[in-house]
Length: 115
Length: 112
Figure (tube, rainbow over the protein chains, first blue to last red):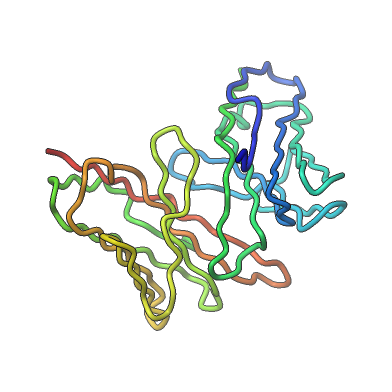
């Protein structure tokens, strides 16, 4: 009964370092996405994928890369961390992207601080 | 104007009170509507979808007004455990991409 598993939960990076946030889901969902949540901003879409081998940019993609080699996994890579990337990151998956009655399942979040 | 707007609150209400939140959206082509609940330092979780005819789930009632482009959430007989942030989420098509837009959330604090 894992749902969406996201790691690490907490991470401190130095400016310029790179890292990967891992995300895996076991619900056979085609649609996966990454959001960041900042105070007063709501959740903002970074990248999303509608299936294995297909990714696209969301609202705030700069500084991040993604890949979707399998249905289950959707890692988010920070290429060269900047203090502006200090945020809470949520991975999400769902059966479809926006359909009525569609439930989005979120991972528990990753708290990232860039110093 | 933000695509999805919510009053950030906080709404401080006593236990047993009825409280209502509104959310407005700017894209008239929006197709799907949801309320999510987010506890402090936790992930958002679906509270309920919002249908054109309105829907009820126990103490919670959600309504959609397409003409005025707003959705509402009514919580009756508030419990301490209802204290959380409630996120309004709107889905629709933007160009050729389907998209979900989140409001910034309305914080509810239920007190004794």
